Image (cartoon, rainbow, N blue to C red; front, side):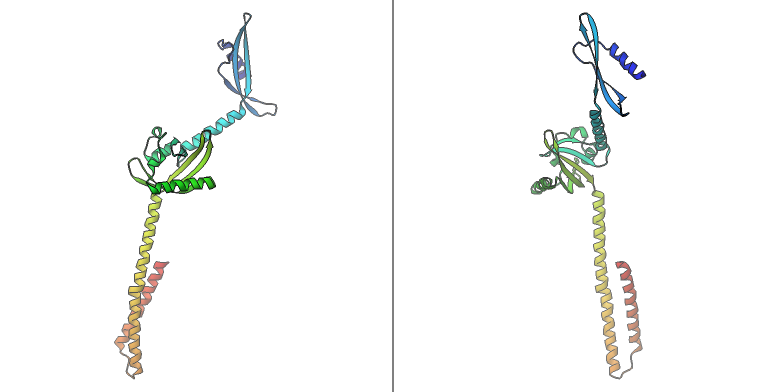
Length: 263
């Protein structure tokens, strides 16, 4: 009731504005079901036959207010998320971008609108045309494109991004929403891990072929010599037996080491 009295006082104190409504004022009121509704109140004063008439109107703007709150929330999310987001037309001209996108490409956000997204693409020539066509085909079929995009910052440095490009219907035609995440460091770590894995595979291959294989081949030759000597009625050479034992012990130890390395 106190708020209603203040609103009434505002109406009476409003300056005379013949035939037009004054500035809108919003308030909340409960309806018959006990739910809050958002109302917009406007006041107008008219002069008729020497008398001033104040006219106030109340309009239920709850749906509009809810829509405004949702849009404000969406804008807040787009502004604060870590991923870089840019909206462009079908030709790649930037219509809007968040601060993260500006930081990603190294350009101040207020200078991004109107720029061509292709100027931030690391690919060039036929590769850029092929990539662009692949996006168009995927968006036409599925409504979105996902993949890796190599980007070029304003300073010329190259970064790798995971990108999702989707199409939405805008008032002025199709809009493309680009969501990019910098994965340069992760890709570098993955490539380093892959290179280390390949190097380890080569090392194990050399161990098996050049060392263990040669040791086993030498052991086989010594055993063959011993077998021939015993078959001819000769006494086995103790030094030769020690050599065979040493080679076998070394081979067993090398097999254990290789098994641990493979694991």
